[in-house]
Length: 87
Image 1: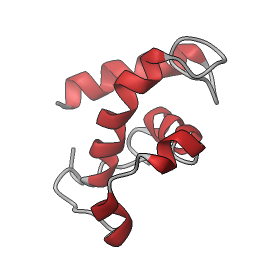
Image 2: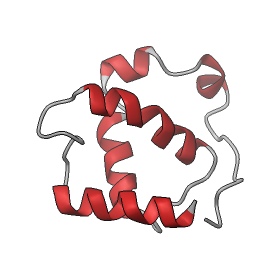
Image 3: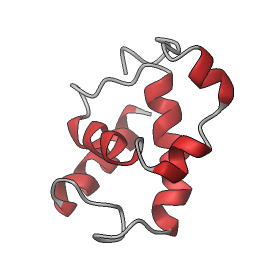
Image 4: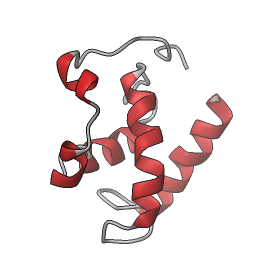
C-alpha cells in the first residue's frame, strides 16, 4: 500500500498544488478516486506523510456535492480510526 500511495503522491506532485486529477475542473476522475482517498484519511492516513494527497483531500472534502454524499456515520463520528496511521 505504501508503494501505491507514493505513486499517487508523485502523480499529484506533477499536477501542482490545488488541482483536480484531470485538470482545473472537477471531473469523473475525481468522482471515481476521491471516495478511496477519503476512506484512507478516515482510517488515519497521515497528511504529513502524504502532503499532496492531503492537499487533494482538503481541496475536495468541502465541495457541496461531496458534503451531500458524506456517509451519515462519518458525520456522527468524525474521528474515524487510526488503522493506517503508520503507513
